[in-house]
Amino acid sequence: MSFRLKSGKVETEKPIGNQWAGQCQSKVVQRLLKGTDKYFIVLEDLVAQYSKPCVIDLKMGTRQHGDDASAQKKLTQTQKCRQSTSSKFGVRLVGMQIYDRQSNQFTFVNKYEGRRMDHSQFCDALLKFFRVAGKRRTRKIIE
Image 1 (cartoon, one colour):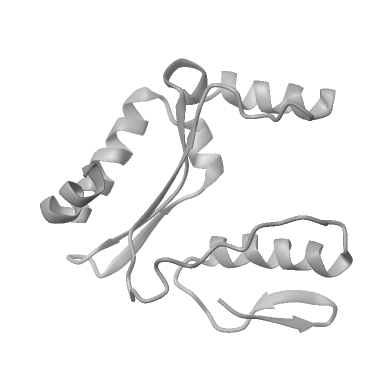
Image 2 (cartoon, helix red, strand yellow; image 1 turned 180 degrees about the horizontal axis):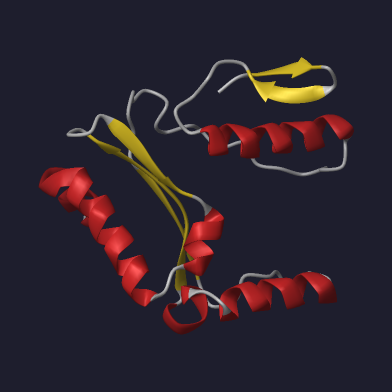
């Protein structure tokens, strides 16, 4: 993904399938340009070579804040856990992108939808992801 600066705002250079991802990444680049973020890790885009990748992002654990988090951050993160599948099951869906060959369309789930999921909805989303991935890919993930 590449970015451009337009009227003082960071935008993705070329349209991508998942507009949400582009918006999130643009905000990160904007903060980097302002110099407010001092430390960061650059991760390799492992799905860049794929035209229609299926991706799932899961947040693991029942505690989401760091030891050095402010009292306010601890409070908000604890509330997010309590109001989602994180508190009871130790996992929450943060994002998902799946491509359906039959409809020739992507389906996206963002972090807000993931937070609102109950146990049944979470399980349905996981099943849908693995169903779309197919048996061969699912075996690879499990290995």
